[in-house]
Image (cartoon, rainbow, N blue to C red; front, top):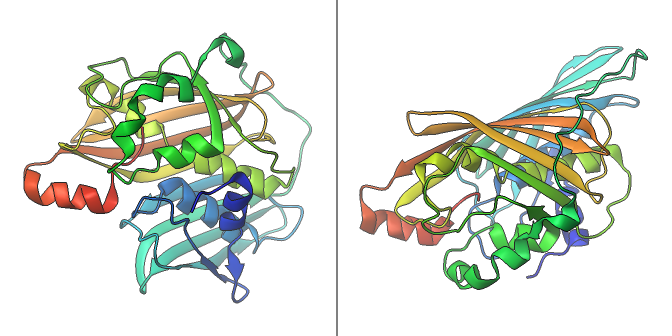
Length: 302
């Protein structure tokens, strides 16, 4: 199966079973483990469908509890925590075979107040002056053949440009900073909830790996085990993910095999969203057993 942008949008449109229960599916696109950004995006869509107008998502938090299996459906149980005039709060548990694989919470707010202030975007070259992801990795695509990675899927769905691409194997230590121009390769419309879900989908990919860049490990290094642990996002202003936005990334800390990534997203020169994620990167000690595990699930992130 080759997932297109319209196919991704269909995947994110979780099916409503009851007023607070939804079912979701994963694309069978090579990887065996559910991509973390998919869990975030589908959770946004599930929680958002239980909130009345004109409340809009402004805050999202989640914990990745267990690797999800792309061959099995996902049940999203949403619990209304608060239903106020100005704010609505939701809690969510995603399950497979009745076992939790992800927990999340989100807050929605009705528009209020007129005062606005947004940090200005850092001065960077425009996307047409940066190297495309496709061009940089053109000579490395053979490395993806047997690893069952999510990377080819993201490259197919999003056009991305940067001055800081790094090799998938043995890149060597680099500063914990990154910056990426990004846009969806096809139009997605202007539905606010779907746009926020698509933003959450792509933002999962680079946060933790930015924090781990000084360790010098490539994202396809099979001697390492990587996983996202938690994720938080704040939405400050509307965004269209099918138009260029800039993802400015930093990794302020790394300790106990955990790395913290912090990202600011800008569109039209203004800050529209902030994301943070903590992830795990540890050396595999049992190479033989973990090689089999890597073949089953594949590496995560970039």
